[in-house]
Length: 177
Image (cartoon, helix red, strand yellow):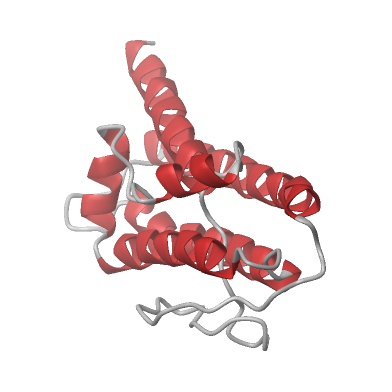
């Protein structure tokens, strides 16, 4: 029983951290002319085109994107922890959590970046939005590059989208940090 509590507690710590980090997330689709970057772990600078939305309308559209990503992350990670508890891996096998960060986590947040980027930034805010998306991309890249360190950071409630909360809070995106 205590083991299940610790797993659930770990999921909530990770989910809370991820939620804070994701509120700051967003970026450009490499197949879209509105941004440059790579969906495969780019460290390139991201540029975001100007969209037609006002800042308020942009925030209103971005918040649900962030919430969907966070919910998907929490659900999928919960399933990973449940499966990991039910069928523990051998010490010589890659833990399921690491596989999750290398693949599913990256896909979830790259989708978020792509959706936000497709909106285009409010006029004059392109650099702020690009900085936020670059911070999210950096977190994705870190998760893919070293899932063990990324997992440890989440479990310690430090998270690896650490650069995003100040960016999103300053912009007014409450659900994306």
